[in-house]
Length: 186
Image 1 (spheres, rainbow, N blue to C red):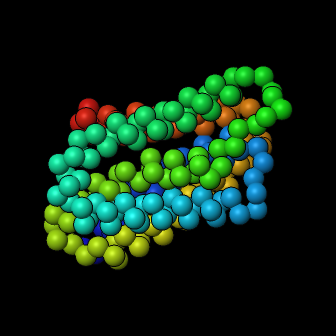
Image 2: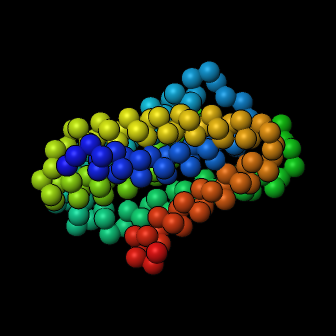
C-alpha cells in the first residue's frame, strides 16, 4: 500500500481524534503544561496499538469485537458528551470537571481508537505491512489531537460555558455517526 493511501486512512482516523480533542479542549478550564502532549500521546498510542491488535488478532476480533465495537464507541462518546452537556447547562460551580484527567483521556483514547482496530483487521485481510501504517496512523493522530486540543482550549476561553455544550454535542454527534456508519445507515 502506498504512502498516499496510508496517509489518507491516517487522516481519516485522526479526524475523530481531532474532533474529540477540540471538544475536550473547550470543556477544560485549567490545563497543566503538558496536557495537550499527554492527550496527543495517548490518542496516537491507542490508535497505533489498536491497529496492531486488529491486525494480529484478526480471527478473534473479526468474530467477536467487530459485531459490537460501534456500540462501545457510541456509548463511551455519548456518556462523556452528555456529561459535558449537563455541566454546560448547570450554573457555575466551584468544582470544575477535568476532561483532561488521565482517566478521562484513557476512556476517550479507547473510544476514538476502535475504528483503528477495524482498519487493522482490514489490513491483515489484504496481507499488508503492519508497522509502517500503524506508525503513520499513530503519528497523524498525535499531531491532529495536539492541534485540536489547543484550538478547543482557545475556543473555550473565548466563548466560555457554551463551549462545554458545543463540545458535548460534538462528542454525541461523533458517537452517533460511528454507530450509523457501522449499521450502514449512512
